Image 1 (tube, rainbow, N blue to C red):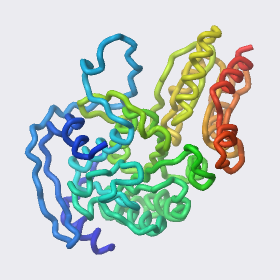
Image 2 (image 1 turned 90 degrees about the vertical axis):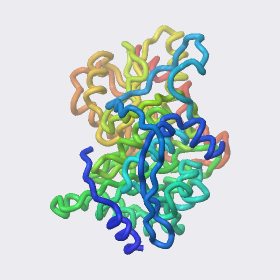
Image 3 (image 1 turned 45 degrees about the horizontal axis):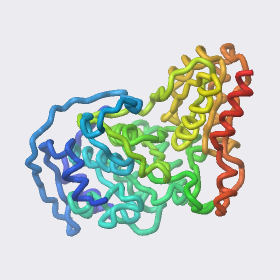
Image 4 (image 1 turned 120 degrees about the vertical axis):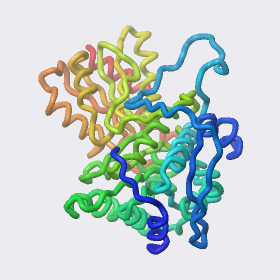
Length: 407
């Protein structure tokens, strides 16, 4: 297998950068790619590298950097008259991935069932037919092995995207991620870069059981050399995917299993989202609510109730779990003087604990009340639906916490 990737690396010119039907997706909802003229390599299973050209009109190479998701338009204008195209979140991930595979022949995908099956949540559907079985590589059920293979491929100049069928399974690859992925750039004295993306579904779903409801943010946040981001909308899912692929650093992209069917209209033009910037979801004056991933929607549901009660919460989707965007967070704290953190991660050693420490260390003098953190309970996620709901923060708890903070 190492020889396969060496062959693939030798067949492509090494360039260093700075940093629900598949056909329907590729044709009708893919205006952003259908107008592009691109060339790429298809690597067949027998090792042959076949150049292919895609005769499409090249659209303007407009790049929107450091973009943030726009607020929903409350006007009565029909969605068909708005610019852009509507995609589900998993389709937006696929669109970003496909655009980068068209742009850079070094980009490849590997994981369990990512090939002709299209991935457990269909993020890679149709890509194996388009790019060949080696750029979209189905692997055995051996997370430690194919994660290590992806890291090795990145060391040779490729840009692998490693998909964990479920984020909990990547615990089997923890040694590769921590001792190799995060540290090799440093321990090699800068001789190697590890431009790899590790992504997959996680979070508490609908009665998936404890082992399939893992939130691994707290596990990976202490690893030096790794960036972590969490997508929450189709817009930032695509933008973060593209930015992560282009990054020279290893990036872990957290996707929530309950957000894949979230729909949003995104631009036809090419854009990326910054890997180190938070998103201002709702400006406010009374309290800063910091959240990410699925909890963004619990917070926004609670915000409606809070507004009706006379409160004006400021909601920030932190997106970048490592490093934190302390510029955006700090400016909000200086304005509201109160902070509520809402996360689905475990309370002990979670993202909320690290965020609390960072705010206390940098902005303690601006706080008028202690920081409050609402997290999942420190228990294995129950299978029973009613018990599962009790372990995760609910909108009513957020409303109560804000009311106490603002007394």
